[in-house]
Image 1: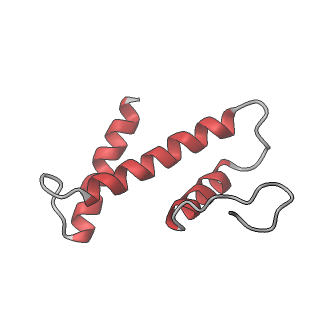
Image 2: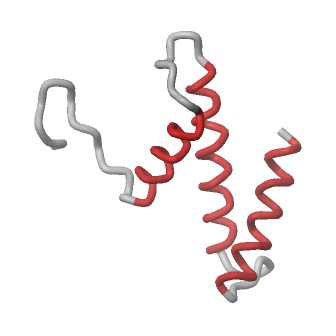
Amino acid sequence: MAQYDHLEEVLRDAVAERTGTTVATDLYPWLVAAAAVSIVKTTTRLWSKPRAPRVRLIEKIEDAFDQVAAGLPVPAAPGKEGAT
């Protein structure tokens, strides 16, 4: 888990620099870094499960980022056209 903590710290600094925010006082770089690291951790855990469909990990990570960027819409139930 230490590697994820380090990654989150590096991402926080990069986001703050890129957005002109401050790590010490602004929430934004913390939220972005935490979301990104959570996506990678969660997706990797799901992907490594024995019964998970065999797709490339990067495809799962990209899908997770797309879902978050879209506001985490509720997926449609199997057999239904749209989410409710």
